[in-house]
Length: 282
Length: 330
Image (cartoon, rainbow over all chains, first blue to last red; front, top):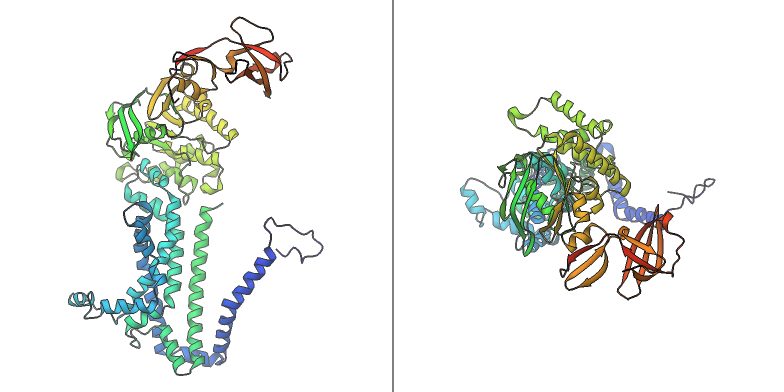
């Protein structure tokens, strides 16, 4: 890679020009946009000292908020896997009328301001809302409960799963399925043994993207969650709360805790992805 | 097991892929369905396999009507052009698939499956690759895995959809010879689809020529090559020289049935050599007819070229020629 710099050895020529330029740009861009802000965050939290940092996050309220954030994101992303799979399957396999419209609607959660989504869902699901009232009658309270948070996060995370699966499904085609059927497999065996395993890497990456996106979700959740400490208070809200009280270091400490857990999850997902991917390639 | 296709038709939208096709394949034969793309040959293969449902007609296997049986219930093995291997499964698991999905008492014990899969992998000379994944194999090796996988369920009939179409020339030739030898060993009734006449002529017991959703001609390789029933079949099976065209009749000759003469002969067609091209032991000579009716291609052994030069005037006579009705559009 650093052919120009390693003296003594003949410079290796790259077929594609501009490696140095693009690599430099990548590093600069990553630094300015991602690494420097994160470093500033860690630095701010470090101002507390190790004891101060631990004291800032080791309170029941912080642990509870972190637990709510991660568990609701995890639940929503898991729910999105089968839903996303069915939607992606329908969009790639069937030429139903209105398919293009549905396809465009999938991206709506990307485009819609999250606060609008939050307010809309809250209005719908609140105890006197269109959906909330009948659900309450059936004994199910959605708004202002962790269930409400999960509903909002399902909405936010869905496009990530659908968009991860679509190209893989297109690429898969009908042949493996037909091969399985001609070998005597039933449709359910074909799905479980041939189609699903081929989709594992895409399902995992869709799940990871949705999880990463929803863990930090704030805008849509604050309206529907009701923000009850120890019940429906999420970690990002706690951070905002601390900021409003000018407790910048405390806010940074909670943020660093979220960062560490998120990075760990992402790394785990990426290594699982790499292991799955290695089988498919040489 | 014998295969009978009776008056099968299949329509895709407004496109008639098969039109009233009837075909008998006797037990133990290797039959080629030959034709250009879109001629219906692959559709017929898929109808026999149960991967397409015909709009009309019946398919019989060993005398039994299987028109409405699912692909897995027919006792067929299907080999796809692009292998269709299961990428997430090892070579061993790919071949074992058909045995492992059998239900209840029909599923063999693991040790029996193991033995059988290894025997099949030996048959296709890939026992060393059992633990590999399809992505680690070459195209020819993948196709042999696909064949072993299809044979594992002990099909009554083997169906191959352009099995060598995605392979390069030398591997193609090797697999072709190998398939013929395999067929001679196990005598499994087999149908393969191809658009390559050389492939069909080389390994098939019988050739079925397809055109526009219908069977144009059916016969042994010699019959279809030497006595083509239609102009289409004649042109599709090899290079065709038009000698004369009159009263709705065309007179044709193959390049190797034409002779070059340096002096005028009775009935000889005069012309001028425009190109001499030597391919291995054979010289291909292009001759522009003096009467302006196009050009003719002559193949002669290189040793019998006799020092003719480009630009020289020669006379052509046909040792064998065929007269066929001149159908428009073919």
